[in-house]
Amino acid sequence: MSTIELFWRARKGAALGLRGTDNLSLDWRAIIERKDRIVESWSKGKEENLAKLGIAVLRGKGRFSGPNEIDIEGKKLTARKVIIATGSRPARPSFPGADHGITSDDLIHLKEQPARLVVVGGGFIGLEFGFALARAGSKVTILQSGPQIGPALDDEIREALLVTAKEAAIDIFTGVQVSRIAENSTVEARVGHKNMSFPADEVLLATGRPSNVDNLNLPKASVDVERSAVKVNEFLQSVSNENVYAIGDAAGKHQHTPVAWYEGPIAARNALKGNERKVDFSVFPSAIFTIPAIGQVGLTEREALQRGLKAKVTRLPFTSNPAAGVRDETEGMVKVVYEEATDKVLGVHVLGAHAEDMVQIAAVGMLGGLKRSQLGAAHYVFPTLGGAIFDAMALG
Amino acid sequence: MDYDVIVLGAGTAGSNAAKTAVKMGANTSLVEEDGFAGTCLARG
Image (cartoon, rainbow over all chains, first blue to last red; front, side, top):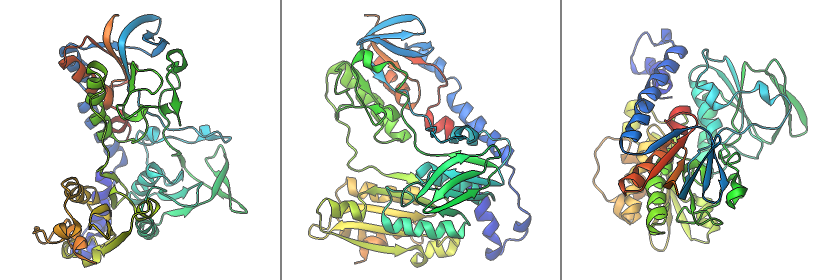
């Protein structure tokens, strides 16, 4: 996606005085091949390194055959504690012709860029791939079943994203019920009271990622499941079997790689030494890699109000940020949600270039308990995109 | 018991859990049916 963002930015370079950008082209296959090489370099040697540490690495499908027993394709092993870390996979919707669709796993292996992509699902994965393909030059249509895309986004950030999507020529339909995908990849759907059809070269199915726990024979170990993930307490321990822990996407709450990384040692320690450490997600920055990206930490304005907090907000459009102007990256905004009485920062939401990094400035401030006015008065490097965070704190 | 800890899945979460367990001196097994990179890293 970073390559596609570079492509998109470079194509806008004519306005900045770059010449030849009209002839710029994107080699989809080369991008996919480079991605494969990078992924391979990450996983290469990993198995040997784990074995070198003294871990018994076993290959095969493992499932429970008792509360403390795992069956690995016929071979039965017992353990005092079991940690479930089986990840997630894209959901396969149940409408007819779903087989004609592809998942995000498939999309990043496509040998050719689809000219027309229809995305079923307007959550984070649908938005990320929708934007990537649109910026790469595909014609993208996003079909969302619910009333709005990105349901977890702050409302104003969503509005700003819709403006950006329009500029990216992404067509978005909400309240869509897909009836089927035809063999020629045309999606037939009911949109409000109308029947519509959406022709496509590929249909991306992005309707969520259920955890890979359904084939683990969990009832054999009395491990309860909730919303397709292992139900755990704040120690990452199964609520129904004290010898079982679950982490990462298998525990399901936050489907992010850093969460998986963070939860591994906590679960291992709790499993071996007794429940000592709780997971803490009170300050948890995350990003959605649309182009430009969205970064968020803490509460949305709506969440703050729902919790009965007296929240106020400040907004800073990137058109007011000198660095964004110089870089010709003035899309988007920073929004700060804070508690009026205490001046505590409750949430920060960013849509714009490098939002994924910018939001971390806010997260560190929140972790340190800095008030909005303290962040607003802080010195910062000028001109920088990150300066928009500080300037937004100083407003209001 | 064959192991102190069996970790199912060698993605980001499982590998890191197994590393911690083995460093703590536990007899640790890690079971993987597929690859070793993790969901986000290998599959976007």
